[in-house]
Amino acid sequence: MLSFILNRLLQAIPTVWAIITITFFLVMTAPGDPFSAEREMREETRQQLAAHYGLDKPLLVQYGLYLKNLATFDLGLSFKQEGRRINDIIVESFPVSLELGLLAMTVALLVGVPAGILAASRKNTVLDYAPMSTAMVGICMPTFVIGPILGLVFGVWLGWFNVAGWFSWEDRVLPAVTLGLAYAAYIARLTRAGMLETLGLDYIRTAKAKGLPEKTIVFKHALRGGIMPVVSYLGPAMAGMISGSFVVETVFQVPGLGRHFIDGALNRDYFMILGTTIFYATLIVGANLLVDLVHTALDPKLRKA
Figure 1 (cartoon, helix red, strand yellow):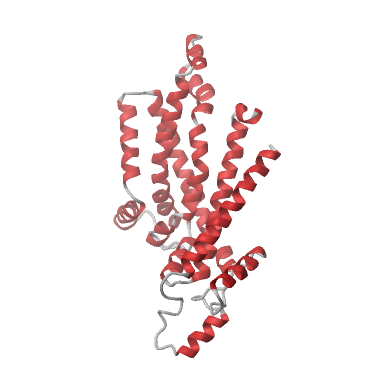
Figure 2 (cartoon, helix red, strand yellow):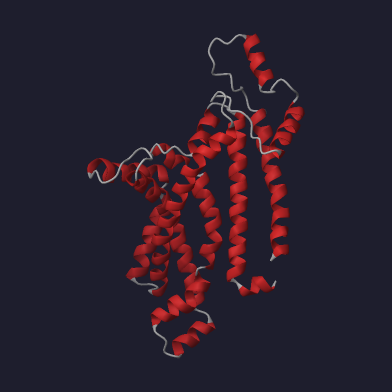
C-alpha cells in the first residue's frame, strides 16, 4: 500500500507542475493587464505598480520567482483586493465551498444510489424507466437553469427557503440541492450499470438458487461490487462540486471560493487566477488519490496487485 501511495504521489507532482506552468504562461501572455480597467492612470503610475508586483521583469524571471514563492506556499498578493494575500482569501472562502460540496454530495448519494439500486433490481419495468428518465433530464439540465427554477418555486413562490446568503440552514438547502441533483443523475446511472453487471455474476445466481431473500442478495452480496463505479466517480465528483460550484455560488450569492475565481478572471487578477487554479488542481489530484486508496481497500484483487 505504501509503494502504491508513493507511486501515485510521484505521478501527481509533474501533473500539478504542468498545470502551474501552462496556467502561468496563458495568464501572463493574455492581452491586457490587471490595470487596464483603471481610469486615467498615468504611465508612471502604471510602471510603478508593475514594478511593485514584479511584472516589469522578463517573463521567465517572473516564472522562476513565482515557483520560488510557491515552494514556500506563498500564492502572492491580489491585484484588485488591495493588501490581501491569496492564501488568506482561500482560507477564508474555501470552507464555504467545501461545506456546499459536502452537502451537495450528501444530496447526490441519498438520491442517486437508491434510484440506481431500484432501477437495477426492477430492470425493464416502470421502476427502472422512471428514475433513469429523470436522471437523463438531470444530466441535460445545467445548474444555471435548475438553480433559478428552484429559487423561484421554493424561495419566491412558496417561501420555504432563502434564495441568497449563507447565514442559516435555510440558505444552504437550495444551493446544495441544485448542485447535488446534477451529480445524483450520474450516480444513479453508474449505480444501475454496476448493479446490473454484478447481479449477472455467477455467485449472485448461486445465491438466488439457494433461495436467499432478494433484499439480502441486493444489499449484502451485490451492492459492494455494484457500487464500485460510484466509488471511482466520487473523487472527481467531489472535486467538481467544490471547484465547479461558482455558478451555484453566483446564483445564490454564496461567499465561496468560486466567486473569487470568477472575479479574478474578469479583473485579470493574475495571482488570484493562478492561486485558485493551483489550489483546485491540487484538490482534484488529492481527491483522485483518495478514491484510488478507497478503491484498493474495497477490491481484494487490487490489494494483492
